[in-house]
Length: 78
Image (tube, rainbow, N blue to C red):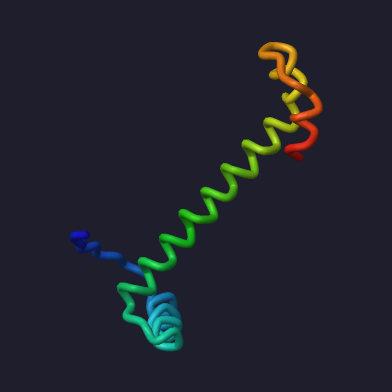
């Protein structure tokens, strides 16, 4: 995968904390920032799945009324 260069400006304290954390983890600053972004994406994905599950829980009866389905099978999936 090709890499893109980003230039980011942060205050001195944030830069030092990032440098220290990367060093503690034994990775480069670039790897550390990339890892943070990927973690953020993972959290967003989990939030989406949680919201979708809540939506289905709240509207399950509406879906069953509209599209039918075996309530026993649906109950077993929970």
